[in-house]
Image (cartoon, rainbow, N blue to C red):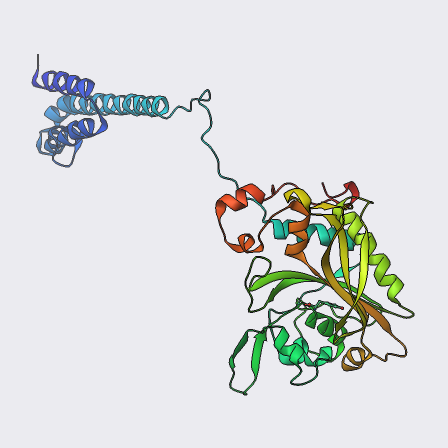
Length: 369
Ligand code: DAH
């Protein structure tokens, strides 16, 4: 055997025996690398006589081609084996039972809000919003709360620190200031998202967070209200009563609901009322439409002429009614949650129990189920 064929046999058997890409690469560097054995031979060709070169050239080139081809083939084989091993190791066993999946739930307050919005949207109400950080004018003054009037204290307001101009902003104590923002939109430069202000006739609902410094089983420092406002010509209490009766029947999904309107006082309505829903609270759960208990669910009334004037509307031309519903409280009533504080405790177990599937959108056409 010549030196060359010996070298070729040795290299080919080492290539064949290589267990992995790294071992193969070591053989390649040794033979075909910059100072590899075959590379050195190729360099040597230059120093040979033409006759010698003619004889040796094809042999050395043939050796190089045979080794390079063997390395390429082996490399492809090793890579294919590696891929096979990986696929075998990572194979998904579809017969395994799935691991338990944690799904987010829709908070009952948000579900109830969506249900309420669906019912009012069906009646032709538009949606408006306002800022949580309000000023004294919108939260109290424009709503006909006299200056220094104890009603301002009654709201247990969270006041913010004075700003540079000496003004003290507050966390809104109710959604009623958005009534003012909607009616005054023409006079106020407000971002469009705050309130979709318009000339009368106005028919809006305003869902949102409100804040009062108060905490017990039926009060939390933050809770949710849904405000309603209708301004048009010749509006009277009958419209308010019909709207709220119709809403209550749709919301509780029963025609058996009985409501009761009691006189009340709010600075921003005259006359003012509260509405109760008849229910049965014996036996630990609340049943709507039967029994001898009454639960208060909202305040409302005819918009006070002073409020209309404060918002640039002539009370001789325009009248309206307004109401404010407690969203969380209505949710407790409809779905039976016992303690308001739990609703904002962020306890995941509570949410998993009382929460709603995200794919159960309220559908007014099919009765919100
Ligand atoms: N803003 C009142 C509250 O928070 C609720 C309310 C009463 C709203 C009468 C109204 C209304 O719009 O007309 O207690």
